[in-house]
Length: 108
Image 1 (cartoon, rainbow, N blue to C red):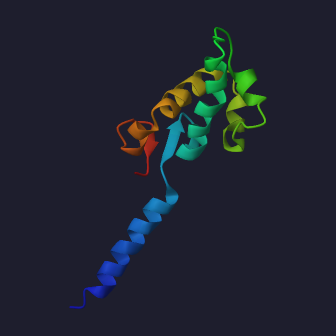
Image 2 (cartoon, rainbow, N blue to C red; image 1 turned 180 degrees about the vertical axis):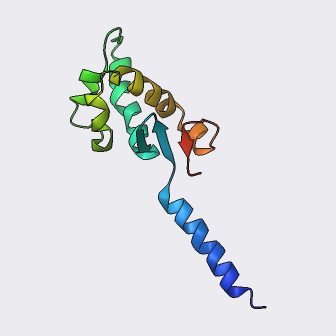
Image 3 (spheres, rainbow, N blue to C red; image 1 turned 30 degrees about the horizontal axis):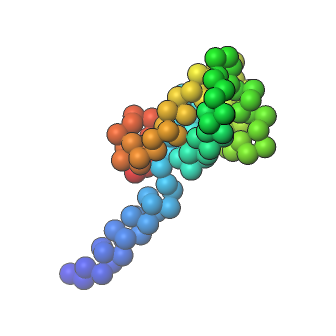
C-alpha cells in the first residue's frame, strides 16, 4: 500500500486546521483570536494614563477607529460591556486560548 496519499491527506488536514486559526466564541458570536488580541492594544493607553474604567467601556472601545471590524456587531448588543469584558480577559493572555485551555476557544 502506498503511504503517499495518506500522508498527503494528513498534511492537507493539518494545513486546513492551521489556516483556520483559533476561534473565540461568546454566545452567538464567533471571532478570530487575532481580532480579540487587538482589544488589548486599545485599552493599554488608558491604563498607562491612570484612567480607570468604572462605567461602560463599550462606547469608548466601539467608537475607536482601531476597533476591529469583526467585533463591531457586539457594539449593538445590550450586554456589550459584558461581552467585551470577557473578550478582554482572553486578550490579556491569548496564550491560554492558543493552547485551548479556555472553553470559549476552538480550532487549536
